Image (tube, rainbow, N blue to C red; front, side):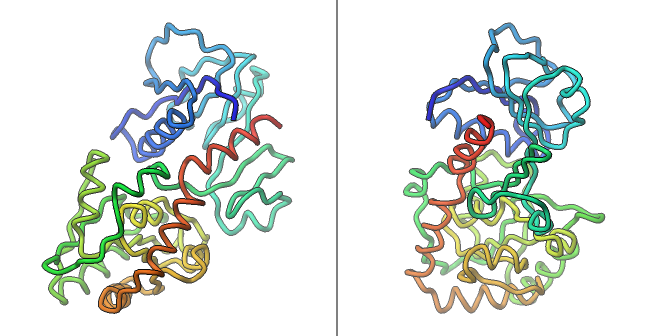
Length: 294
């Protein structure tokens, strides 16, 4: 892969939930040998950005420089100003099941490209780099653990998951486990909180489940050393039905407990291998680079 200049634009760490995606992109682009910068969206940039690839999210793109010799990968942006500036751009959207009803080309597992609207669809990924999986081996000893640390979004509304989290937490409490929410944890702290947990499910709200949205949380928790567990059939099938699944988030606790009590090391390691090989930002970036060159 040819090295290039990359600019991650906006969302400094902890400023927004999307900042954790920018953090992961930043780490992975650096790891792959690209000259990578992460700028605050209101910063005055005194740097030659010619020829750069910009990674952009629409809530923080107001001050972005529009340069004819650069490429722009836009997530949830108003496209009109990029079209008016006649810059080279593609659109990045998160995979969901309705993508399959469109005129798309499959480029990887759960990654598709729609040429007619210059849109790449792909799920997010774990923020670990492939070689870092060795630092966080599979957890096989659960004795003495009764805390369940939730490190992720807690939201109400149409896209929220608060009802599913509440159902899960109530069942956990009845079974002697404490469900605790942690906000704005530093990346290393987040990993340790998950590793210290008795369980680490990836719980999604009804809208996400119904639409087949694939969250980054499932990839992260598996890469940090835990069994994968989901209330989404789409995510379950993405992992070839190897991870723990129940559509009922309360019942998911019992399914996870059963899998812990009957721990299958070989299956758990194969799930981690699948995540390392297919679901890191190294994988996502390689496909982004290919699409941006079209």
